[in-house]
Amino acid sequence: MSALITGIHHLAIIASDYSRSRDFYQRVLGLTVVSETWRAERESWKLNLALPDGSQLELFSFPSPPARPSRPEACGLRHLAFATPDLDATRRHLLAAGIEAEAIRLDESTARRFFFCADPDGLPLEFYEAGDSMTPPAGQTR
Image 1: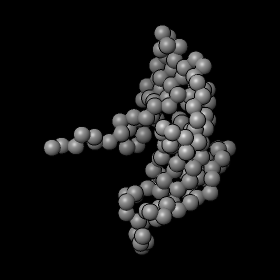
Image 2 (image 1 turned 90 degrees about the horizontal axis):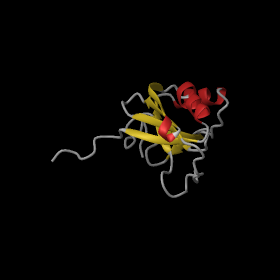
Image 3 (image 1 turned 90 degrees about the vertical axis):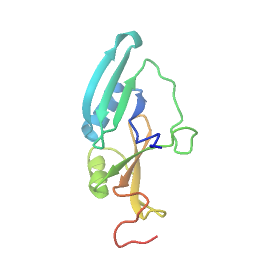
Image 4 (image 1 turned 60 degrees about the vertical axis):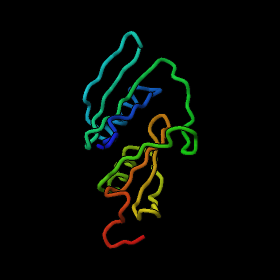
């Protein structure tokens, strides 16, 4: 039997301020615009952004979206994690762009480093040192 799931196709985020979030994901994080559509019947923008692995992030605007708890311990989606080949450079880039980023920590189960920041709506974003998340980096053991 073949795998039922082969990967993540896309993630969807509803922004409270579409322009601010569009700028964050496109300019600050460097995601490429695939398409952008104004949906008049819904009074909503839909922006498709490409991630390097082929998956996409959909960014929506809606009039007066309800607030959602965004703390990592709230029920539902806990956070969105991006793999990065250079964690230190990624953190420096975010700090230079005026994005608050916490200190780099170590994932004790994988021996990989990571840190969190938040998108313009407070959605927790994790940046995780690239590599197989189940295998420690070369020269390290669990």
